[in-house]
Image 1 (cartoon, rainbow, N blue to C red):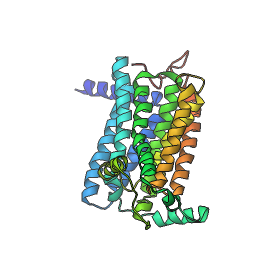
Image 2: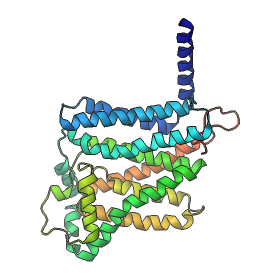
Image 3: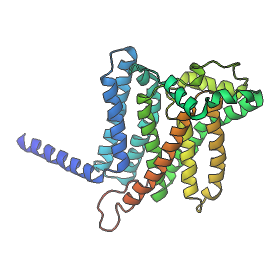
Image 4: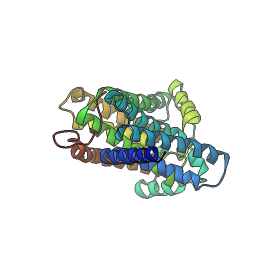
Length: 322
């Protein structure tokens, strides 16, 4: 029995050592983010939202930690199984972290920051763009921008899902590090600067005159949106980041032409966030700043970690091939 205990302890120490050696920057960011939100909601006052949020945040933290230990600790021996476990275990909890915000943010019982954000807009611009853009409140304009706002989700899917399973090497490292930084930093700031947006804070002369696409946006936000998720605008940060990423690889296919398409789409989505009264100007500015910071950081991190698994570097590659 004593020998078995020693064997288990030695195996655990071995796995811990290998995991620590193989940890990548994005692993630390993901673990730190999930640990943070779990700690925040654990310290929040008891409420129905808090009870649900604690369970969800703990589950996402455990799934992420287990996936990292199984893959980075090389508990799973087969490369393909290990690579798949890592991809799903790191990516899916970050996706679901958005949906946890719907119960997490109210559970924190926050003081909404809308009037402070509005005051910044007034100081910078003399108004907020949602008010100025009321002059273009016509059905064609509302539908045009609602289509792009709704298309944000398609942009996320097309940029991330195929790359996660088909891309390899430096491009995948840059894309995923930046995307992870955007979502982790964005969701972290939601808990620090909560708000509902212009539509819930100030009065407008008329409701938006939309049709099918505007209704799709409203239903999506009402049923799946986190409600208090305005600062920074991730509807700004993600399209802007993808455009910067594509432009950085504009000499490679398909980004030789895709960067321009992404730029046009990003411009319309960013305009839609303010026109549809979801965001203050400062939310958009913060989203742009986050996109540029994530792009710069992704290049630095990818450069530093690009040689893992090569020559005399015994560390596991950041993204093993499927």
